[in-house]
Image (cartoon, rainbow, N blue to C red; front, side, top):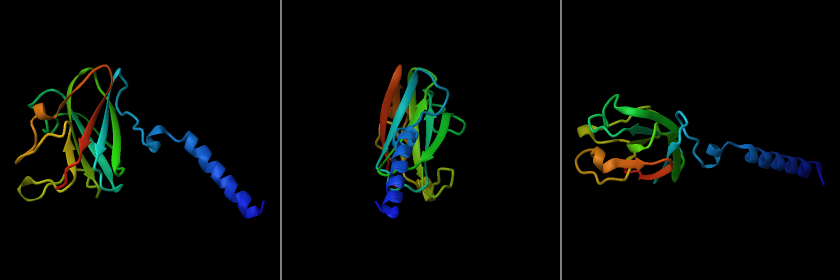
Length: 160
């Protein structure tokens, strides 16, 4: 075996060993954020157009007065965007009714941006994929019931 072939073989072995030790999040499985509990929500975000930037998620409780309101959230977190599907996970305080809003912050603005007439300028979505007509959904249209263990919700991004 030549020196170059030996070097390539060693590099490949190192790469494979590194993959075996890589955290689950780097291999497509989301690491849950928040305080561990017996209830977690796995979020599968579909129709992600690029790996650019980050995916931002906001978790809301079962209070319609706080849904999509400033300081109404239970948790906000971000993960690197992954095309075509980005996985996220959050530990919940307990079983109950929750809702999610997500947006793809491809340009790293670190805020949800809107254009004229309040129209979104970033890809976005809500739990349960409600139909939208002239505004955001109600809490009732976006709520997800989470029980003990793991609950999964899929969110399909909408484009501005």
